[in-house]
Amino acid sequence: MASTGSTSEILVLLQRDEAVPDHLGRHGRLVHSASSRLFVLELEPGERASHLMDEPAVRWAGESPPGDVVEELDEAERLFVEGWALRRRGKPERPGEGLDWNAEGRRPPDPPVPPSDEPGS
Image 1: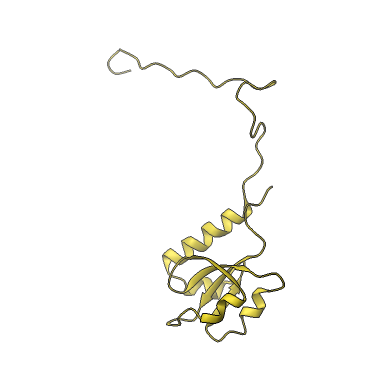
Image 2: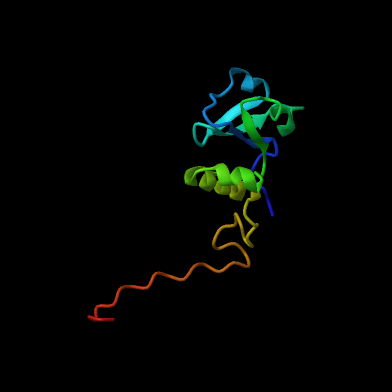
């Protein structure tokens, strides 16, 4: 199964009522902000999520939040985390992926079915 996510991307959850620390950029590039306290950070080479845990403003940082952290998230934040995790998993390779519909060994799709002129059918 192919993954579309970067292995250097992590989630960062700030403590409640904390502003994004100005020096967060030394750990990586802020890629996305899901809420005022939940972010996706692309880590700089050599950086780890554990390095962010030393930051007082950071509640948690990593790829898959533990249950106690998930319980603190509001509904929109939980949905974002679930979607982010699904995107990172990628999707399975399908037979014929990227081939033309009429490539050797492939069958064209069924033609569209014209609507019936009969009432009630």
